[in-house]
Amino acid sequence: MTARTVDIIVCTFRRAALRTALDSLMAQKVSADVRLRVIVVDNDTVPSARKIAVAAAKAAPFRICYIHAPAGNISLARNAGLEAAVGDWIAFLDDDEVAPPDWVARLTEAAQAARADAVFGPAVAVYPEDAPGWIQAGDYHSNTPVAIDGAVKTGHTCNALLRWEGSEWQGCRFALSRGRSGGEDTAFFYEVAGLGACLAAAPDAPVFEPVAPQRLTLHWLLRRRFRMGQSHVSGAVGPFARLELMLLALAKSGFCAAMMGAYAMDGPRWRFWLLRGALHCGVVAGCFGLPERAHYGV
Image (cartoon, rainbow, N blue to C red; front, side, top):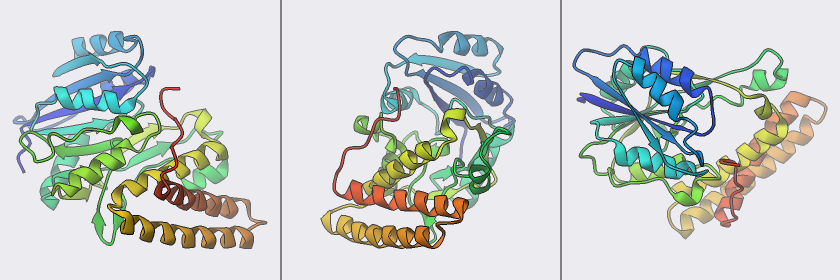
């Protein structure tokens, strides 16, 4: 694996935390033969992130590019970043995340070790002290790469590195139809894998994401889990694959309902099975093609 140039795409939407994310990227320690560039894509109606990006660029040890790509559709922003990317590899970081100084180095090492075309690191949730105990114990907000039958089949854009320049999937783009509901990254990486990309996990390359107070509710988690289930369906190609997935999800939903009954007097465990059930119900809804609710840009 040769990663001489890495373009890091950071899509943003009205978040002051962007500056903290950029500061963490400016502190990256990479070998002398690796060149970094950051592409900030502002998805707001007005160019609200321009001042932050310009100020960061003045202090950065590498180039920071700013693109205004309005509005309220994260897929549109991600695609603008892809259009601007010219690196051998591209990386993705969310605008509310903090990357340790060795983040890029660890991602590239993981890709080399696994001979992978894409690697995904964990996004570790950082909870405020007053977060509900059951949420902290369950760690429902962290995002960790999942292997199915021993293989990583899709990924996320909150912490990723992808071979890009000259790749077979350089023409892939994020679906605009998912740009307000979420799950566009799941579908994107399913498509990339379908074109022959080898995907792998990079467990030793975490980033850290403070959890916003409005996300510390059961209602928010239920909506997220349900949408995640809907997005998972994008990996099932053809009617028979969807039918098989739906039947499996129905069975799992029934099991979760039974476990909810068994733990009706145990609040944390009851919520755990409720959230798992919401995920599988989302899969069933996705198999039926039910529309996904807007979560982004509202």
